[in-house]
Image (cartoon, rainbow, N blue to C red; front, top):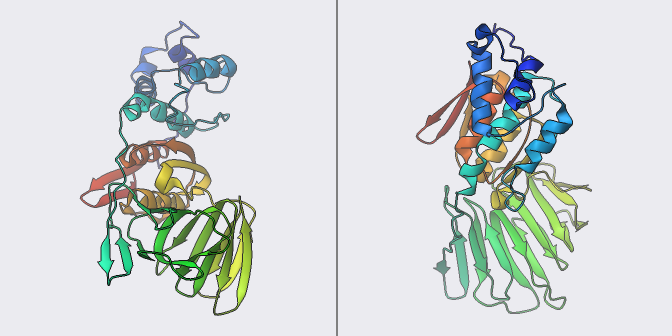
Length: 331
């Protein structure tokens, strides 16, 4: 069994500069203090823990974060465990490194099908999402391993496209020509809005999140229709063909576009699912116990390597990079 490691308040006070009293040499030589000191060097700033004047330390920390370029959104909590320090410290230590990153420009891929239909098929592991402009001027951002079919020119009484996978639609509203997204026998109709649809084949449910305006979510087989308004989400369960509505947006539903992530007491199994959908890299859990570990953290525009390292450090897990992804195991 792993030895329980404790952090003394005086150590943190010494690292923050709030105390000039140096810890004893055996403390300085301990593995726990060396890890804390290393994380502190990565962070390059102050952090508060328990009684070491939290208000003063947090004020100092906040003042050193570049407010014009938010790389990580840290929310202050009262840390009760050793792990909590490393979430903030490691993330802040990567601040300068992340600011130097550049975001790749979205690309377009087209493959003509016949004379009047176009198909966009995205890669399994693209460098970024694909952005297209539809004939009516509406914009669609398409996630990995997805397919969108649309006509070269919208004609008739409606504007109809077909989706398999995930996409974010920013639709130019035209009441006289409704905008319809078909997903098998499920239909999403724009009523003047922007919305995200996640409907990968084989998934247990299709999920629609409405950012602005409203949409009509319909099951054509069951003749069931539900209106979703801005700030709400709807789920269509493929097995039961039932539609449910939530008054909240699904957490991280746009993370594949924004690279902004927020986890609150989320099992690592779900955390890894989110990361795989965003970064298109498989994450394997070697030991089943890891799946149920609760995780809380915020990330913004971090690379996947940095995120998995933070998670591993936080919960004292082992993470190994393989050719096609990462493997988490117990130490």
